[in-house]
Length: 308
Image 1: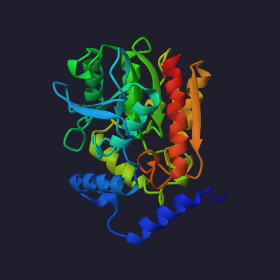
Image 2: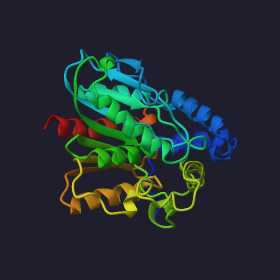
Image 3: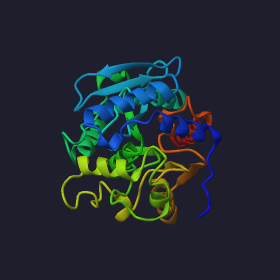
């Protein structure tokens, strides 16, 4: 089998994590998984962008945090759904990336701290994100100016949620999507990148199985249209999308396949792949300078869609 291309910065991080040892993330309690994930961000992620202010919002269907790149003006808002397999992650783990999106797009960003498994299994995360989108569209006073539409964005499971909100609300409301290494098939396919990168690259098949078991515990849930949109027909119309995958990611082929399906259906889609990098690059940018450059390029393309 051909050896995958691994950037030196990726190899250094993987070697450092391997040297530390310790239990597999999938063998921890949900609370310990969440604490470990937050601590990893402190080690590997970039600092927040200067000049972006933020405030936690009251009155929404779940905790929300708004980001302002300057004085608020009427316009669309980017709704951001964090990754973490619908089990880990929160407003703090994805705080820096939300400031980056606000700084590059010049738009307000609202991050969603949706309910997660195992405490709140499917469809809690999906329902909370749709409810949050509708709340934001109501132009709450805390956003300081009218909201004229939405764009959706998210990484990993959050990419799934971003697509879900776009499907539910449709292109008249959602103007663009940014899907960063989205998880689009939860049935654990035994082929392609899922098999090739199923262990040794932080996110692995064992951890994905744990996430699916916690959030999608009942028979048939993993194959449903919300959890696995790649296995179901797409709507006739969707907002234009930017899809970014990572070259060393078990989910890589899912993002590739969704981009291909959108293009075949005549939808506008911009596809990028971060060669030699792993899943999680959006929240490990201090460790991966290449990831920071590529993510900013993807966000700039997303911003161009919104400006047009």
